[in-house]
Image 1 (cartoon, one colour):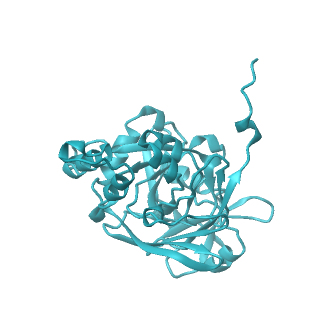
Image 2 (cartoon, one colour):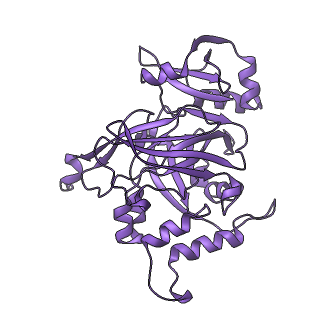
Image 3 (tube, rainbow, N blue to C red):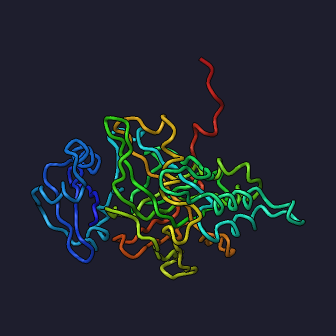
Length: 332
């Protein structure tokens, strides 16, 4: 089952649910996916069971909703500061090769990059037995709900950016219950927009390179993540595809288990505050940047994966000025 949020003419939110290949139907009685999740937690029911008991309203064609630009991010929070965008890197088979090429050192085994060392740690200890804790992954912070961009809306890079780089990923979607327990709603495709030129200059600037907006696919897939996820990432310019490549996710293609990545995120009490929303991106091994593509103003990213609903498309806007960012700090 897939759930989504759309905007209403009055500026409100409707929550929709559908099965793949079917129209979407409005879920009556819920003003947001966040409210639906909290109601399911309070009732002690899985989301699918909760949805099965509610009344349905209007019916929509997903393609028409996309054409009309009505999709919102599939999860939001009434206060965007209580939505956290985070992620992990070097988690997928092949991801180390891309990163290693950016941070490469000449030499033998003793000169391995820190990226390759981190990747090998994941291969050796990223999938612990049930009930055990594995090695912690690379982790990064991207921002809060103010940095979450709706499907179809532009990904805006600040004027000091050096690159417009897509990262096609799968993201876990979570709401923290009243008791501080994280509850996973499901998964969505994501574009973890990054600045790879800044990162390549010095890998200690990775944190800076990640402080960019991100976008989620229009729909959240409920239930478990398939072991083998296959998708497609594209860059389009003036309507024509200038780069296309498959991407793979799911634990068959990962050096860490989902449970291990979740443990090392939610082990911090900071990330278990009741009512908060977490969008945690699990990484990728596929980048157009690694193939020498230089994304330009108004190019469009398109990311899709079988079983995850409507495609995610976002145009790019480069060199967004921010007068406050360029001004001196004021002394009180």
